Image (cartoon, rainbow, N blue to C red; front, top):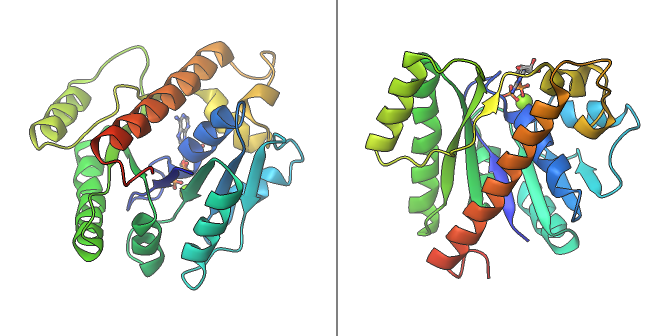
Length: 229
Ligand SMILES: Nc1ncnc2c1ncn2[C@@H]1O[C@H](COP(=O)(O)OP(=O)(O)O)[C@@H](O)[C@H]1O
Ligand SMILES: [Mg+2]
């Protein structure tokens, strides 16, 4: 049912990584479809490693002609649909946002990244006008340092909050395990402590992120029942 769309203008912000982290966690207790709408098909390549969890389903033929149909079909078949997109400057992004119950904007903690994220907010606002419907969204700070909180990051977070932009409490830390998922083509649960450092910390970070997403979807549901009806 809920459709979660990852959007950010900047390549490397962590959209694909965060999509897969969330999808794996949700697929532990429900069926999840990831629509890999990035023309490079990173999630499809990942799945070719053969270690895709049973409850995770991947659709890799989405384009701007069929994205709405693909999302609608997936939403009928699986309780969660996650859409991984590339960039913001295309019709497919607007179309995917039009179907979203929650848009997640992954942003790395630099001023430049935060400014670029502004493009994503403008695209969301544009879609809200087109559809005359509020689109719940939230910034996800990604690749943050788990050991130190930089002043830049604190400043950026403060700026976002002051501008009324929702920010997840959970950040995704920079973790070797999150990179290793793609190099070994494994879900987090398929990685081994002998291959990656701090795997337990990555797992608890992933769990916390998924829990906050669920709580956010529930909150959005309460605020506007038509969104998750
Ligand atoms: N939380 C993270 N920890 C470590 N590496 C990360 C994390 N998020 C992303 N990366 C790395 O950063 C690069 C870009 O991430 P990716 O998810 O592909 O971004 P996008 O989909 O926005 O282009 C990849 O090499 C990925 O492995
Ligand atoms: Mg990507």
